[in-house]
Length: 347
Ligand SMILES: [Zn+2]
Image (cartoon, rainbow, N blue to C red; front, side, top):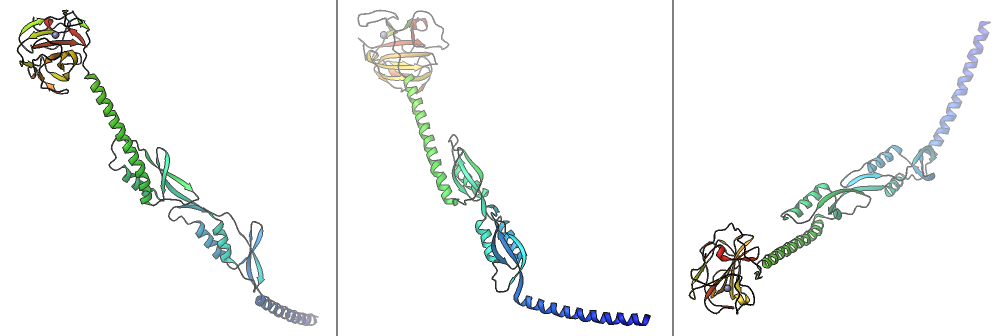
């Protein structure tokens, strides 16, 4: 019994191996035929549309990633706008694959964002360059030698843009220098105008006050005065006379023509020229409030702005202006109001 069964099994196994051999051979033939006609590839789908086939997915993806991760120079980042999808398929060996076309499509549709550096003046962009270092160099160069007070608020602003539009150093410098020169010119002009205004103001304060405001009080003055000339009092303060239409604002001291006139105290000459009925008039400012006037001079030897010491010769006695003979008309004014010189001198 066992023998018969064993025989069957052996026979059956032999048949099976034979059948398997046939199947294997057929498969090999089929694979060989397929391999001759077909090859494995990836179909590429972009935005739901079939684009074509590629040979090497890994190599293509690596190439695309290298492109997208490039941050050389001013490139901040690159973003792909399309995302190809790949599916493994068998294709006819005659079909051309498009690896480089897929790469080109990803590259051409990618958006590159650049990091650029704008240079602003008073917050307004004036020029732009491709690196922060370059921007700083340019700003420092523009600022060099810039005098204090010139309004030129330079700043560097980092910007991200998809257009790479920058200037070279030479152009950026020239753009900024034009503005700088304008600002410097405006500053110089304003400075000159201010100086002229101050000069005019100073000239205005040098205008001689010949008002007939007089005070008969003894007003204290902190300055010790000396007699500018010695001589005879010929007309007193406050007197009225036929040659004058109003009250006498000074004291007349008669003395020979050409007698030297001394400064009654130190001060700054604030007037020194012809002044109507005063003839040649010298005014010395001794302080913000006190001035002395020397009128009818034959000549004046000081000029406005000049500092004089007490006793310095400032001019010579004459009879210029409304005068009937050589004498010094002396006035002492406090805040423009004529005081009686005999309260301070020539007692
Ligand atoms: Zn007088």
